[in-house]
Image 1 (cartoon, rainbow, N blue to C red):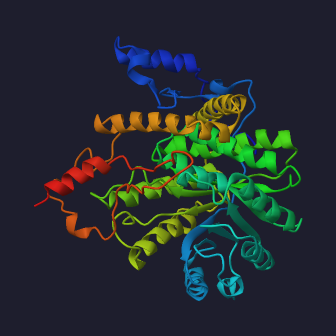
Image 2: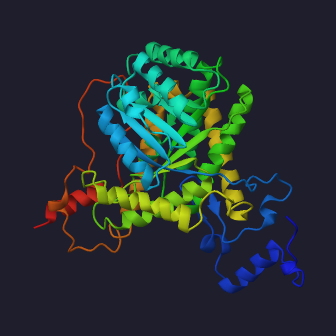
Length: 459
């Protein structure tokens, strides 16, 4: 693209000159104390950025349009019902579907019958069973451009505290699926559920480093299949620009790791709004939160975005909530022109700096994890759980001191609002006593204690 002559009649202004102008306007107040703030990840944010912030460095945010898909999840307990639901969704604008399969003995042919107008399909499994999953992969591969099995036994260990069957058996199962998959398999076999880390309280640097180290465990065990991509399942937090940077930093970090394994394939990223900042009270604000969060994921380069209904915390799944969530993405894609035909944030000085700092900090933490024995060792040593718990406690403290705001909940709350009679599902953490190999990560929302207190006080 030719440089624009728009500013030829204006003299260039250096960053130093801008800073002097700002300091003059502060009338003696300290520049750093007044205008520079530090994020929970230790990233200092200045009031302005220029090309001098990345002079003599390679540009990270090159203009690279990335088409994205509108996704929706279908919980499948019976094949025909799941198939019917999928066929109903496709004419409504959905071009990617995640089948959350509870029973792997279901009929794969019946589930996928006549479904063709999708860009990609995803499968998540509550248990592992080689023959049915292999059958699902074979049938889906013939019907769809991309198939993502999202096998994640390490994620199950972190979430449930147990392997599906046992470490050796789980990895043997995954190796069997990888070995039987055709070489022309277009998609991914393994998945990294990094949304679990975010929803449990990890900060963005931890989220990136743990996701990368989690993925490295699979790469170490699947060296015979270097062409396989990995899907990262990411949660989108509420800090608009930081989340854009997080998604871009993840892709940058993946390329760094993949290069060491001789992998040319890019990673695949799915995104879904965080549960951590969603609220029961002032529930309509959830709609605003999920809109900006989906925008962050789109601009950050996610491949598929799965939105969440604004009332999912306290209502059973319903047609109206699903429709609103779906329409949010349709409006972003087709009316706001976030359609992946161009990259509106490429070259942004602020984002360039955020991406670089976030990636550097995450890479440093990743190296520390690997030097200490790797992700699984730190998970078994309870180090990962402890670090995430510490981060969660800090963010909880910021919420209670109103440094971290959830409008309508810990600030500007409508005290006359009543929700006790609206709860169709239990919106709080539920303890499930069970024997586990290690302490599981437990997702928890910031506003839970405050909401429980308000519910008890309702007349």
